[in-house]
Length: 202
Image (cartoon, one colour):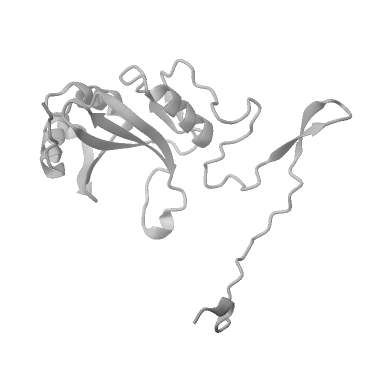
């Protein structure tokens, strides 16, 4: 028997009732329900969303970091780093987005949810690697995409496009070596063609 999802507005009422005062903000945008919660209650929120009747989000299908450092120009203020969890209830055919901000910009740290959804393991490692967000309670928090000796976190908005070091194979020494970046930073402006009838187009 197929179970059909409730409307986002009906799901909002269910989630709001289940989480109570743990909700900082909740709303529907573009047909999807999002909820903001505080880092201090993330584990409790995760357990409730997984187990509460009407929620039953058995699967975490994605977890990603966000760097809001250049959003101040468009009117967003608050902590620099957040993590967004995308949850799926297979049994009730519904989805939910949960956002939680790391309270400290200098050392962004959030509770791990790997004990609640094991699929968070590699996602949390990726957010740690690319954004430098530390997940407290993660059993094996190490880089997953960059080299072991990589310096910095490449998805942070202040990370240089060319990086800090480059790697090459040295034939004389018969090994890979790291050295300062030799690529000159430059801005590429695309050519804009303003000629009439360019390419035979009218």
